[in-house]
Image (cartoon, rainbow, N blue to C red; front, side, top):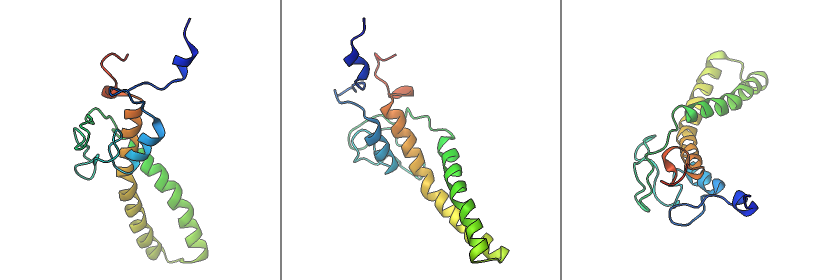
Length: 139
């Protein structure tokens, strides 16, 4: 029979600390290492460093793939569509003016959100021990 306390406790990491989901996601959103929260996660705009420069945590295991792009499109689309409608109905009715404003706004919002969603996904994968982030003995 399985002990109930072992089912409700989060997995323990290499150094004996628990990997909690919310702090790891917050650190990833801020583009910081999900383990220590002080080292930079990216060495470029979207290129994840192989290891954290502060704590040495391996970060090359991540498999974010197209997830950050899908989330960015989802959020930006849901923000811009109603704003476009409200702006057209209440303020500006010139098509070229609307296209100019919303093109710049959409690109700027997308460029802001894309690396944050990637950090979010890497933090999520690290906390849940997905892909190579798990211990050697984990199944």
